[in-house]
Image 1 (tube, helix red, strand yellow):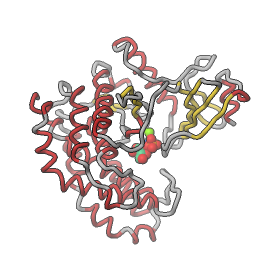
Image 2: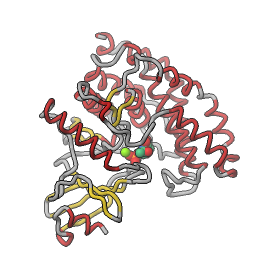
Image 3: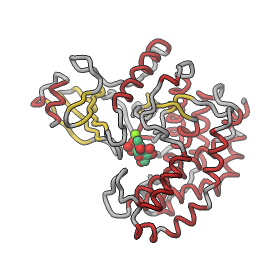
Length: 355
Ligand code: GN1
Ligand code: MG
């Protein structure tokens, strides 16, 4: 099936090799090699992204703005087929090909705060470079993707329509989550607070979505499918969610899911190094909330999916989405415990003092 796609791009399948690539849960990704040329081939999951062409139109609009206003900024866009398409639709689905950025390195977990700083700087730079871009022209590739109100409603619906046995077994976790409902209430306030600006947000700032060079300097951000207008808490929050603990969301030894304070500081400093003149004071006071917001949202998304028999994220073993949710809950508790300390830490960082 992939052979037809390659032919559409003018590539001879006989001359190419294809291997699965990366750890994404939603799209299918392969590395495609032809001689010493390397590409990333990707199939968009159109159960999740209902209008894949919205993604390519968004990327095209942003790409042409960046080319004009920040010509040296590395923005990796899909290659065009001989008939000038950057997304191919066949009976098999929606496919696109990206160039593989030469000598770039990616990580799935973080082993130094310097990498967290670099990654946060890259996501900050992305939004900063697009500060003059009219974000209202972007289409919502997943409507209300990070709307916690909606995620909360979906979670409640899963408690009504989901797998009864799984729900009964989750009693303890549900009690713990109930104590975190203040996070949803705070989000309701943010939505109506004009101090929280709508900007171009990446919405999936996990570490594997940043390319580094061999010296571990950030090169660029990738995986632009969820680039849409949003609040800065989405990007900062997802960095907190995925960089703060040494263990990933798949870790089942939950005692290791602990916030590392120096990574928190690194994220804040890296982001502010690009965004300090963009963010309002109220936003700057919401770094910790951002972490809680994204971690809580991901916990209820995983748990809702567990109750709905893993239809969205899939599961390689029974209970995987339950474990992922518990993992996120441990991370949230650790962040709550360390909140005061973290606040003190960022107040004394040089970049914070300048603001
Ligand atoms: C999904 O497919 P992937 O791994 O890039 C999800 C994110 C979650 C993440 C959790 C479109 O991202 O929101 O944070 O899983 N993307 C979508 O691992 O739902
Ligand atoms: Mg993604």
